[in-house]
Image 1 (cartoon, rainbow, N blue to C red):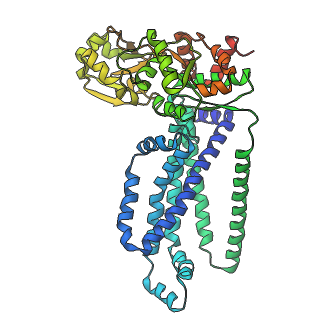
Image 2: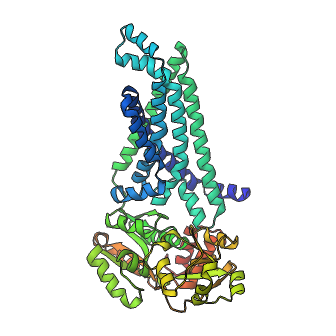
Image 3: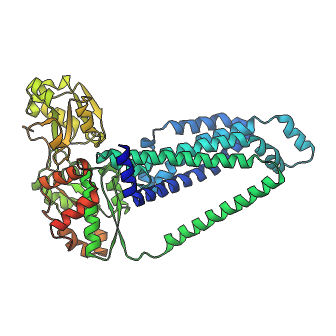
Length: 515
């Protein structure tokens, strides 16, 4: 494993370096905002003790909200991406900063403050010359704790399409690439330790009281401030500089085949046009987060499945069949301003499997067979399957089954859970790369419960009006991928350890789409 991790780091050093810089940028903004707000809030609480208890209670309450829940709450207001990630991290960073500032200022001996005032010091002078120096050890301890925690927590940013090392962690999980997951986790830990060491050095320097030490500190602070200002100016200039070519924003769900299709779109669009593609991989929550972001204009294109669109987006009841596609397409155009283009051809529908040992023990070959013994078994599935209109409850109602236990699983961990016996049955996708190599029996959907899930690209109509060439480009993808093709590409990533972008480009070249 260590050799694999090191090899991957060496081969993909630019990839990991970019993610590390994004991680530091997201964390740094959150830390800076929390430093200012937390310091001011903590100082006000120390000066006005009556507001201390309710204020701390409020901050403590925010701290208890699960990060995933907070992200989900903020997405409708601030969308997906870095802004929501920064807001979430800032809210979690406030508690240690507020508490440290309040504790440090509240524990100062009152006689020292009275002595300073008795010598004619103003409130401002007392704060700068007495209170802050005495409270500094508490404050620096809070800053170090807050910074370390924020960098570690910033991995959640990838769940909503933001950057950072969480991208490597989450992508490694979903593509069964343990080395990538470990590299992302290790680099996150190293960044947190590095920042803690730097802050420890700053804490020691600030504690110096000699004239020479203070002069050195002032020079170092001025140098650091200059670097920050220059960096900020460079960032502003880059942000305001006109793009060399228009950018098409493509999003994908956290699934191996979606990673592959995302790179297919990127390669094909950039190859056949003067457009640049900004690819956001593995947005957590899939359709539930990407589709609203499409409506708000944050994304332009994403691969979607017809059955998901029918039930999860249009909120239609009942199973979807491809005879309803014209109605689906029309409602997408009328209600959402989206079009379906580039229907790949493969059908990635749901299926049920059980461990081979379980199938042989109970004689299970179909969903109806499973219904008779479901009460003795544990079912595992992705989080959204338990909430979908065409998901768990509808399946149980249709077949009259009730499982003894259920387990929410990330898509990248379910095959491991089945192999380890943590679950007995699980929901799969028919194009799963690991399906062919797992010790599982695929059951027959004898009542044909699951809908059709043909895959195609959902595109904002406004983008097609601005870039009509996209119609012809995306139409090249029509009927290019069979179920077997997609399963083989998924296996190449998950089973053989190949990169999604390499698999995507090789397929397009084999089909003659990249000349």
